[in-house]
Length: 321
Image: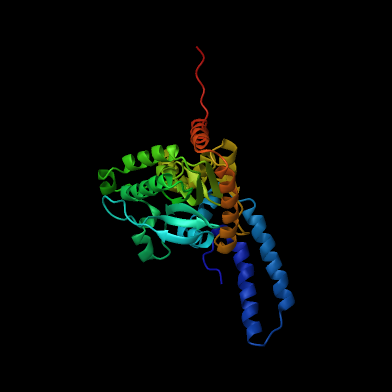
C-alpha cells in the first residue's frame, strides 16, 4: 500500500485504506466486495485528479520533494540504454551528489548527468541530500567538454535544493565552478536538454540548466530560493512559506508564461511518485521528440539561439528623464 501521504491527500488516503481493508477481508474468503471496491477505486481516482488539478505552489513544492518521486538514476536507467557512469573531476574527488556518464537514447549515443538524492538515511548522507560540491560541478564540466569533443547531445536532470553551502565547498571554489559551467554550457555546439524532475533550487540547479530546451515535470519547482528560505528572509519566519511560494512563481505553468521553461511534461494522476514508470515513459517520449528537433539545427545556430534565449529572459524598465 502507498505510504507517504501528504496532508492535502488525506481524503484519498481514507478511501484507499477502506479499499485495502476490503481486499484483506476478501482474501480471507469472508467477503465478496468486488463491486464496492470498484466504486471506491473510481472515487479515489476522481478525487485524486480533482486535488492535483488545483494544487497551490506550496503544495507543488511538497510533491516535488516527495521521497518516492523518481530520481535522476531512475530516469537514466528507465529512459536510456547502456548507461556507463563516469566518476571524478580529475582534480579533487568524486562527488556522489552528481551522477553522469555515457548512454544511448533509442540507440543514439549521448551524455547524461544530474543531481542524485538518496532514499534512506545512509543514501541521503552519501549523496549529500542532492547538494553538489564544486567537484560535482567540475565532474559535469568534464562531461560537457567530452560531449562537445565527440559531438554527443547532452541531457541533464535537475533535482537539488541548491549547491552545498559548506565552508569546504566555498574554499574549493563553489561559485567559480558554477560560473564556469554556465559559461561552458552556453557555448556547447551540441543539442542540450535540461529537465527539472523535482526541486530546481538556485544556482545549484542553473549550473546544469543552460540548455537549448528547458523542460519541467508537471509537479516540479524551479526557483532562485525555496519558499521557506524566502519567508525566512522577508518575515523572519520559514513557516510562512505558503505566502512566499505564489509570488516566487515556482511552478511549470508560471515559468512557461515567463519564458523561463519551454515545456511541461505530464505526470500520472497523483504525481510521478504514484506511477514512476509512466512518468519515465512520458519524459522519454518528450526527450526523443526534442532531440530530433534540435538535431536538425547546425551547431552555430544552436549556440546563437541559446545565447539569445537566455539573454531575452527577464523584464526591466528605465525611469523617464
